[in-house]
Length: 163
Image 1 (cartoon, rainbow, N blue to C red):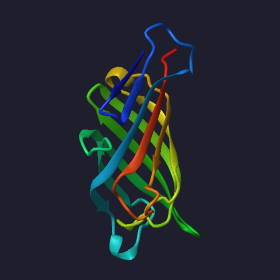
Image 2: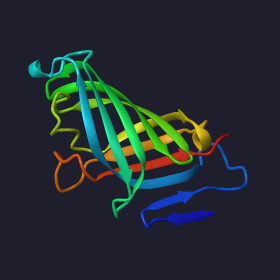
Image 3: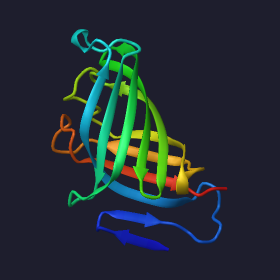
Image 4: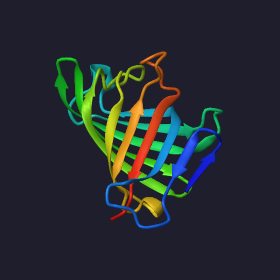
């Protein structure tokens, strides 16, 4: 069964048991950052152990709010091109939360204006409500018009069926 809501979100699920690993729910959303909080000495640039907390507003293409994506990023080390980081994220929607993790490189973890210039694949590691045993992928991608923008990022979620 497929239900299309607000023109931008497509939720797909099966009412009969599905094979393990089969995609049961897809969500194609947008997200815009509402707030970034730095924990550490950002005047000196990001250091190992520093954190940044990001609160993203999840919305459709018309700007209608559908939920939130909360992220905590921890700097692990400096790299030649920026910082190696690990992040945990919770996508919060009406039917529950999707929890995801990633370890990747950022150009500058101490900058509010810069983030990844490429799509980032997160591993879904569970959740709450309808997503209590979720697995799959969550992909965040900056808008094509500007890698420095914190508005209208693509947020694509593919949740696998429960075994």
